[in-house]
Amino acid sequence: MIMKIAVIMKEFPVLSQSFILNHITGLIDLGCDVDIYSEINPKEQKMHTEVKEYDLINKTFYFDEEERMRKKESKDFLQMFLRKRYDIIHCHFGLTGNNFIFLKDSLGKTIKFITSFHGYDATRYPGPHHKGMYNEVFQKSDMIIANSKYIKQRLVSLGCKDEKICKLPACLNIAKFSFKARKCHLAGKVNILTIARLVEKKGIEYSIRAIAKAIESYPNISYFIIGEGPLRENLERLIINLNCQEKIKLLGAMTHEELMRFYKKSHIFVLSSVTASDGNQEGQGLVLQEAQAVGLPVIATRHNGIPEGVVDGKAGFLVPEKDVDALKEKIIYLIEHPELWEKMGAFGRKFVERNYDILDVSRKLYKIYQDIPI
Image (cartoon, rainbow, N blue to C red; front, side):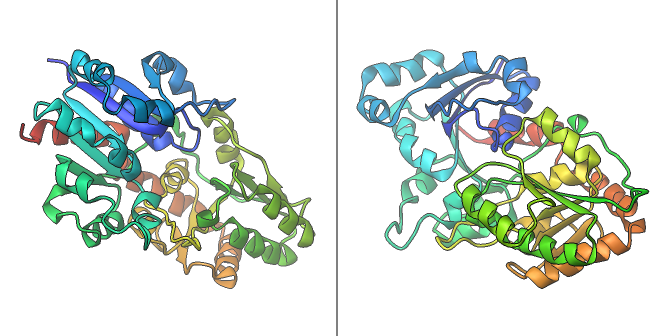
């Protein structure tokens, strides 16, 4: 019998949330019938090719906040879910779980309700004025999924029972990330890459400052930052103030195919995540697994779930948060020891293959669904 699944999230499709896209396509490849429910249509100009390949827009139902609140008690809204006869309702992010946990009571015990926590939903929230905001989600969800040990521990501290939480990482389709052994450019050029939303917790300010210092000793560095976000203007001003606008480029958001061109020509990957002023933190940082999959040595911070996904000294290096000098030193160390690039890249690729492949993780998720008692 085909498993019917409703995946609910805040917005879809979003370039920066490839981890949810992978969750959906992985289940479809296993033969599941998946519908998508999104509170917002982000209407991004670009989208990953899988959205078209899997015809996901035609599987997606949109409703805005006002409509959702109106339909919360609406028989039509509930009848839609009853008519579809879903086996699973899977909400991504705790806040979405909060918004839709009423479906568990309304639809009865025949439907299994799962909530996944990814990062900000367990760190920025709940704040001091939102204590206990997840109590109902923790109590009524049949399973809570955390993408890292750190997020699992955080959820336990917020009141979720340990035995109700399953740790399952975000995954990637490794076949779409071609491995390339990195070697020193004949002209001594070094291309450094960051892929991240331009928000405070990604710590882009610190990597820019570290690269600017490294450029003083190694002027052949080029630093490419791919992603969009509210801090773009601030970061542009910082780059100008550091007189690095010829060496450090903000390139905006890109599709997977566009990203692969930069992955291919880069030598080192950097992600300097930090705890934001509002408490927002990373959960896993899937882009670090993507970088390892293509063979890049990585430099990242000892931040929450990141040490679980990057083996320090083997696939790259971890440094303290907001430590510009430590970040600069590791960048220079890798520049001065290009013989490490291929070795670290090979280690990282095998590590990702063992732990983050979409088929393996999707099978584990499918079994989680099956094992939840009705």
